[in-house]
Image (cartoon, rainbow, N blue to C red):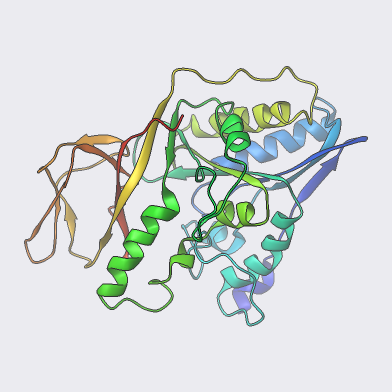
Length: 318
């Protein structure tokens, strides 16, 4: 608890003279993903200097969403903030305290741009929510608006299917005797899922590998494009990307033991062929691709019981 006493939560808001959309931009939801932090601070400086003017609506910036993870220079403090994101009357982990502050803030906005980076090399991409549906998992009715925003962030690759695929992994964890929390589909709810549940739209932008010097510029361009697209600034509306690639996640594979190893150094969106060996379990059992597709979010440092990698197939979504 003593480590917490030096920490605080910070958001910076700018409101135009006329009404309009309410946008929130997050950085460092994971403490070792700092490209969004750098880009947000750059945009705040431009607004404060008068170089950039917010004319309508409101934009709120959160440069460091998880201050404990940030000061530790690691992905999370006590747990992954982007899992089981919900307010609680009995906060135990530091991320519970963040949720009690962050969730009401998200609910007070109409749109979310969440800026992230990833472990291994690869080009930037945007994560989309579900198509319009009235199902029980993630009902949604604003897919067209969300997709329109994503197409103007400046990246050409798009991925969807997150919560559906996470639910598949949850079922597998439950069968293997996982804890009640990690075997709960709601454990897959993060910032974007919470935002959509409040009636808003939300896009996660993965800006590149954690230490890629180009990643902050990807995040910066996305912020400016979002402000222009939502008409918070008078900049020309960005054109939508036309040379697109769309993929849909369809399976998640957990790391079950610390000695589970990849067969080689994988990067996000490396192609895999049906029958190809992706890795090996600690007992020598090979982990084989069940279909031709792509590997996404390979994490060689995943904790046992956590996501090791995802599998994706081409989609016609975008």
